[in-house]
Length: 84
Image (cartoon, rainbow, N blue to C red; front, top):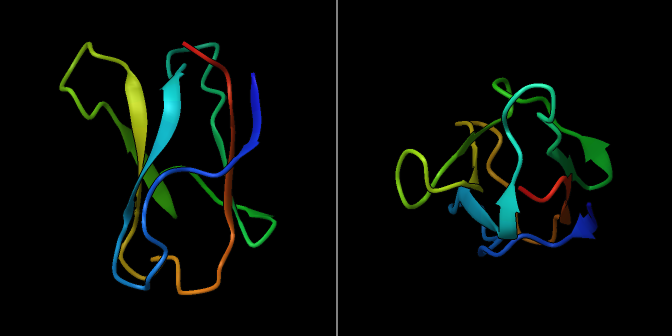
């Protein structure tokens, strides 16, 4: 498990894509990534989606925030996840 990791990506009010240091589990029953914005847990599908930057089957490592949920300058992002 990784706890309170700061994902890679510019928090500038425009960037919506952030990556984790390692691949995370996203298959049942281990759909375990939790995304926190300023300490508040975000909702998968409503606030963000997850994907595999290398394409299908390469491993989940990307968090993309939804329109209207883009992290603004000064906001703090953290993720907790199970390593794939």
